[in-house]
Image 1 (cartoon, rainbow, N blue to C red):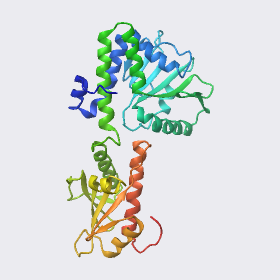
Image 2: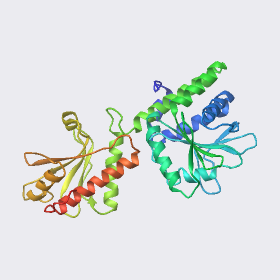
Image 3: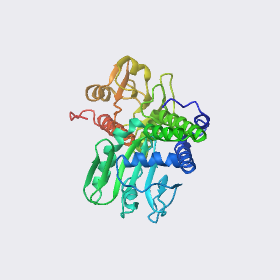
Image 4: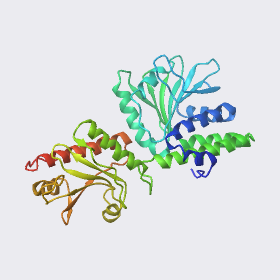
Length: 348
């Protein structure tokens, strides 16, 4: 996408947390105004699932009897829900996704649960959705389209599908352009700009941006505090010239560390942007003693310079954001164990 210089994208900067809802409403607006845009959605879905009834209208945030609330519901001419669309950028899946949404689909003919996500997320979201669906008590999952991320639930008419924003918006733009619907084409450009903005601003590896890492650091800290092995009492968020971060206390040992992004070290060593910074070897509250410092050097790859130590934290790529967070938490717990038991020789 290259159209993020639009009015919608500009307005989204004022309400970044609402970009997903805005994109959902904008997509529904375009689909309900244009039969050609709906035909593009039908074409995309039928590229993976044959004979799905055409979508004649869409509705947003329709709560089902089971409490599920998909972003978009596509209804056929009889008013049946044939297509459920979840509009995503980089937000995590909810506990109900995809299984409760698959169960909501009718089974009297082909029906589809479609996740619409950034192109780069397709490859990570698809295996996560498959694992969740396979873990449920349901029939075997069968791949039905080699060129699409699409599978069928057993012998039912229910299908799960994932596609990127670019493919859908390109198809919609072509359809309405050929039909001479210049106003709808302009609306699609606005939606494309909004989607591009949200995709960039919320991406885990957005170049030159720290929004994702701020959320990652704050989320990991909050989880550690909730589980009582971290504390932030009396400690502040303290961004530095090389990146966002905050101070945390490891409650078992009382050691204090700065937890954050260090782009200077990243550019120098090319290892990771995420680090813990400790001070040591001085009889002062919150600092590591020498044995703790040595244990971190030996078992956690601490880099030592003038009594200051930097411990790298790996940030996984090509996985879902929730998996990145869980992995960072696992690393922090292992570091906690090393600090609490510096004489232990077991691997962290």
